[in-house]
Amino acid sequence: MPVRMARFDAVDALMTAAQADVLWRLADIAFVPEFENAALVLMKGTANTITGLVAYDQNPDFAGRHVADMQDGAGGLWQEKLLEQGLVILLPEGDRPIDTLIKAEQSAMTQQAGLWATSQNPAYHYAGSSGLAGDLPDAAQAIGRFAVIDGILERIEDREWRSYLNFGANWRDDFTVMIDRDRRDAIAATGQRMEDWIGRKIRVRGLIEDRGGPYLELANPASLCVEQSVGQP
Image (cartoon, rainbow, N blue to C red; front, side, top):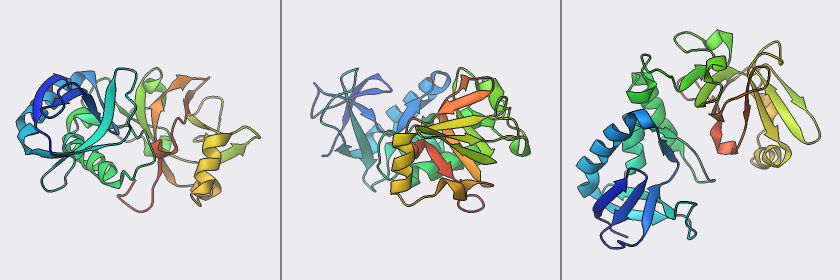
């Protein structure tokens, strides 16, 4: 479905010349307030390269927007360009393959571009384990915010209705990820064994709560990524 961007209501409410009465938003990314203007500049500057739209859901979201990928003539995703510049954050919302988007975001992180700059305050990238601290602030500073947390998984506590992934020696104070039974079953259905993650680097994203220590309830299994090899989170 070739498209031409007719106008912008906002970075996350897009319209096309072909369907001026339909609102669209880009799939699997979220805009952050500090970088919305920069994202808008990039999108306006590259809108004429967009030649295709792939819709994912016939039902609009709460704001009346339909979810879609928008692609240039070479098949590159608009989301990929935004992620590479560090202007948006990856927010998986389905079970679609997102390897390309993960790599684009990692490229921005490595280059400390945009929202991943070490000078960014408040930060969006935190350490959930002391061994990964380096230049990253501690996950405890992310409480109340949406954040990306990297940590080394130390142990797992399985219960009937949920599992707890613990990233420190003291679960009462250290970073913890809770995975409910349905999402635990979804992970198992992919052939993964969470026990195999122990000792490995985990990257997880979501809203960080205060449950004695920083705590995240996994909303989507795609929001958790296990390091496969050096340089590939």
